[in-house]
Image 1 (tube, rainbow, N blue to C red):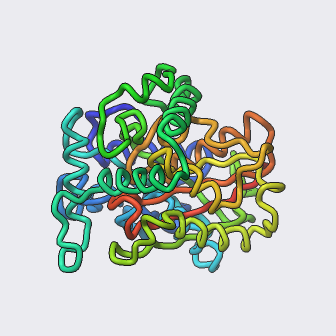
Image 2: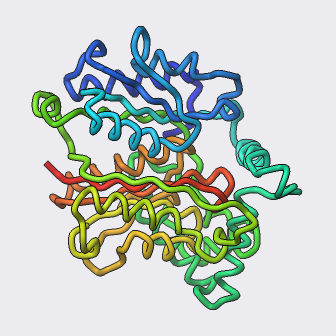
Image 3: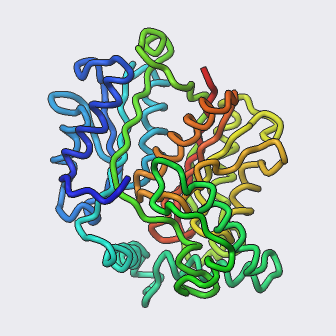
Length: 352
């Protein structure tokens, strides 16, 4: 997940090759490949001309989604559930054509372009601005205080400091979080996602094909996806986790989960700021003492852009394998424009 000098197709090819090798599946057996990426990040138009072939789509079926990798995984699961494929590869790749420290400004400029120009007419509006407005609203309404924001961020960063995927390798205190660079409103740099890069591939198969695979790490039992409303509605401020709630309802229905707090043991969620942590957790119906939340440190540990949905799933599966837990949830969102018109995905997995 560290910054890479490799070009996009090299990153994707390596991730997909490793995933297929681990599963014991040949490229010829892949019925469909779905890649999550954005041309504007990749620095070229129709970048899927590079990545789709590397993701297993050469002389096969493939397409690209401009969104989070969680959406690619949902699309793959739907294709298999419809009996249209036995093996589908879902890939997320994020390696913007700009180096740190300029990447943050670059990503926020892209975020500004993502808002609807005809109705919003945004001036300096970006994901970070939206997050700052929401955090300020939460503080003003007494839903949380700034010390608690810092405690949540410090806890996640410190917990994920030893993760193999982290970009923040040192534990921090709440005072260090508060003392980091002020970004927007009450939010500081260490309260925001830890930017990283890379490619992640997930191989999904039908149950008959999965039984013959070399390695089966988990069973995807439920999935859901939902999108948020636009800026004028105001729900991005007053109910920012509404898409997650709808996506979770769908995922739990498919998985037969009726009491999430009792049935789910581990969750990896995407809360871009600590102020969004409680709303997202509540929308998932989780928060009880028996649920382990973000064992990897979540996005405060590593946030690989549009590959995030696949990373959250990977972290849940690894945590389940390490702990012996039977059921987990991976939640992701596509916060290009903050909580405005974002798309959330929820995946329910069962251990094997």
